[in-house]
Image (cartoon, rainbow, N blue to C red; front, top):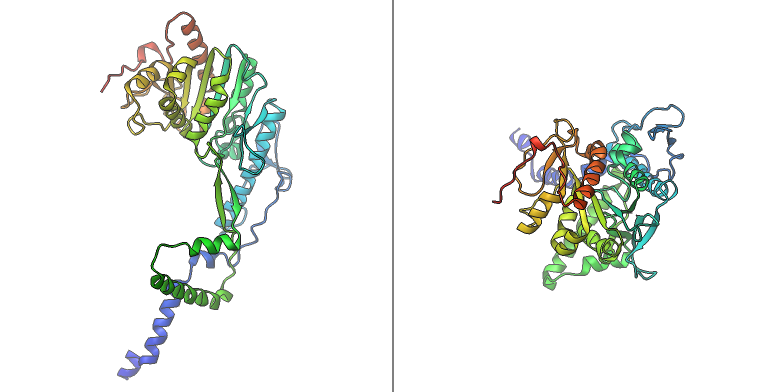
Length: 400
């Protein structure tokens, strides 16, 4: 009886083998067993969605808003579907920039050869020759691309709140030239060849003996995986590699590149920036790298819930002083629009964007931003600095 309860050597070996097998099973892979193919339409119509006259994404047949949980209990598949729709919307916004806003697409780097990775920006026909005003738009980090503030807003709210199109149209109406940056387009992804995959696994500084031992373990692991492959049905995604775009491999590099090759070469007497979230950090980095040029050319900067940090970015005193006089940050807040919001950082005035939602700050502050720019031009012409907030609520900053 004792032997049966404790189990003999064979039972122990089986138990050990079972534990080993269970420990190596990838639960994420098992969850893919009944997952439909990751194949999605490549057009809005294929998804059976369209933007209505109000700029809202609606189902063609039902008129309902977008539904994320298209298939219950298949979060990964639903997410992939959402991402596929997002890529289609990115191309749709590019078309609107060209066809509705009449912007032209300009390839980067400017001297790119045919075989190298490329990015692009959009600009109005008069962007470099307009003698009066130039507006530069920089979105935040993540999946958004040129012309967008937030993909979530485009899909779930409307085009006005989620895209830069209202800014572009109003700027053109008021006589601005326009340049739309594309700071997240930093690389292209290409599928790895079998040779590249093998090469990446072969490259190692380890001693030959250790490498052989490691290879042996990897072969044994592969053998075990192949053995229980029949118990699951994973959708294996392609192995890719990233090839970065020359001089545009990060949002910060991109901002500096566009400044050097376009903005600084423009004829505009007054250059204005609207920079959202990480775009604000990219602008501050541009100031650090091109301080004298920016001070000489830029009249005012509207930041919307910018994530810049003058301490972490080691911003000097002269830049902080300039930012206090020429920048305003519309931040997420429960306070009414344009109400001063206290800050611990000595950089620029912070005022409420009239919303607590980060992604909505650019849209909600839209009318105030253009008023701020107009006042900045008047102040520059009269040699008096603009007041971005109510004078009675103006923040007084001290140098630390």
